[in-house]
Amino acid sequence: MEVTFWGVRGSIPAPGPGTVRYGGNTACVSVRTRHGKLLVLDCGTGARSLGLSLLADGATDGFATGRGEAAILLSHTHWDHIQGFPFFSPLYVAGNAFQIYGPAQSSALLEGILEGQMAPQYFPVQTLKNMGARIEITAVRAGVPFDVLGCTVTAVTNPHGRVGAMAFRIDDADRSVVYASDAGYGPGGPSREAAALYHGADLLIHDSTYTPEDRARYPGRGLASVTEAVSAAIHAGARRVALFHYDQDYTDADIDMMVERGRRGIAMTAGYVEPEVVAASEGLTLQV
Ligand SMILES: [Zn+2]
Image 1 (tube, rainbow, N blue to C red):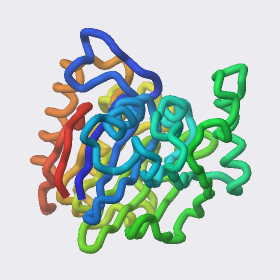
Image 2 (cartoon, protein in one colour):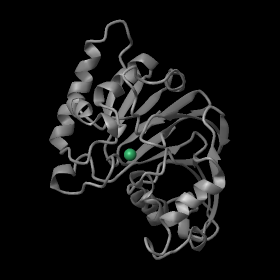
Image 3 (cartoon, rainbow, N blue to C red):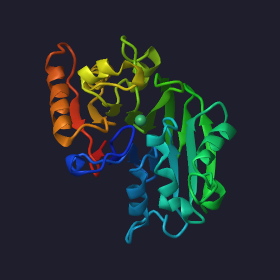
Image 4 (tube, rainbow, N blue to C red):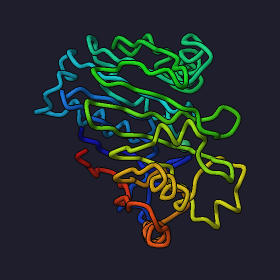
């Protein structure tokens, strides 16, 4: 699998001179399966650049000519995970097909939530039905594996505000990628179900919004610290952990320091295999 980060920021885009290295766009990650299929994890503002790349000259997926197909997995529908959706250009090319999966009581409710931000008061396109591509929307049930473009996907709901946020595990033959954004664990860390989902992942992409101090300062925000991210990876036996969903107020230098603290945390945890700690940034591609 090939994983590319298009947006690594949490909560709200944070463009400016202080964030150019890690990037200011909100959550969006693409996963290319071993058969070359495309899965998109969240549609924060990073989805705009992903969309442009899929329509660029020389792109071979067929999205420019209406023959493209992809799945979009939404962890939840807070703004930083859906605001890039109306600006994801391949959705406007007739003939393209998108399967959208996310948490909701029913598929109709999830569709209604996504329709909400398309309403004319928010966006001139007015409805998903005007976008051109074929869009199929499916509510995901936690704990029930389902097939997506040749992969098996399993979801678990992590604590995050009133609605929670889904973490997804994508198993593609013998390789696995886990995406755990917005993970506001209690003091005991990940739930038993979440720990099982993360277990043995080749790559764990994990919420790393805060330093431990800021995490303690904002316990009600439902977001993880860098030490919680690294600790989750160590206990899961994950081979690699990609830190992401950084706080909007952190500069590149702040994130450098936070990542360094995450790496130092490993040395103090005896008896476990060390995961490689990667700091996600816009444009970074990892082979899994
Ligand atoms: Zn978020």
